[in-house]
Length: 451
Ligand SMILES: [Zn+2]
Image 1 (tube, rainbow, N blue to C red):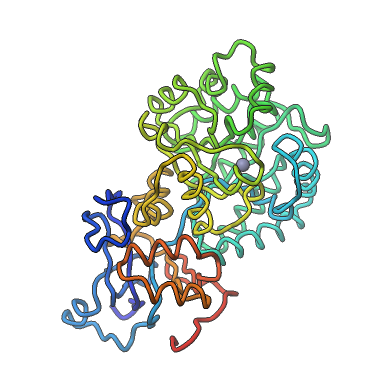
Image 2 (cartoon, rainbow, N blue to C red):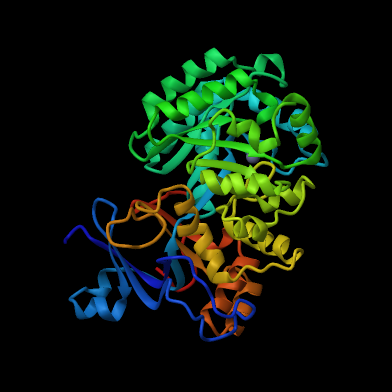
């Protein structure tokens, strides 16, 4: 037990999806469910191999003989599992916050020129490193990531993630039409590139491969068929793409695939839908598509900051949930405007409010940890502090600025505190991020009286 390390602070994690009895009132002292674990003074114990040994109250662990003075102490800070982002583009970091266009123009004007720079392995490597720093800085420890059409951009990303010991899902963009010619692959070249990348990286350390046709307009039927073949051939492969984000995009898809019943059917007919498929956006899905998503188990990634920024529309989460479709949450940087899953929750809450739907803070914090881990089929490894899980965790300062400090001082219940955190919080709340028990360098040190 000598190599076990302890981290002491307010401890929060989830064992299942919270179903708060009174969703309208985070001030209600009885949250009415047993799917979360919270210790005002708790300790997370992590083994030398980076796995959770225990997560309990300091009192209980001290009674079992734990020397609390040997724990790293974060008084007034919240320790929780690292957050999970289910849809993000690492090569778009440099074009985040680019002015004024909707989806198709935005792609042509900003994204495609930027992504072409990733043909250069050295540039890609530096960007991958910066991207991972930013994820850690914002408290995100696992992400499902788009690279570019160049295999070297994927290579650079996986190498950087491996070096850091991060659990990441990523894949080379497949794109063989409707983009600048220098920037296109072919069905054959994309198949060869994907095979090489899958064999090298899928299942290596903590890494997973995702087939990544960008979206229906930039892949021919032949290329989508290649993706379907590979998805069937390799066990445990993921698939990520976009769907029904924007009305002009949808009209374009209908033109390009006149035989398809609807947008989802384009992917369905090439065998791209299963429970490891994550489709970004899905704002304008019809009833049939929702039903088919539920049948296949494919997920929808809700990207509120992106949907608002690009003027795409409001996702109807309730309609998807009522149809039995799993909805995960994501930033979609660079269409999205923040790496922060806290900011993303805040915008998700507003998008849902506009549709008279609500998002209770306990559900919200579950969503960005265990919930998203479940959507990615990774909840047996990450997402909470169950014994044996990989110890990816973060330390949050609930009082990161004067306003938050004041608001927190007025909060009575846990839910109220968490709601203030998700509404006002961002990367400034994240003081430390750990991967498998290893502290990630380069972040602000713990402030105030915490050591
Ligand atoms: Zn996207």
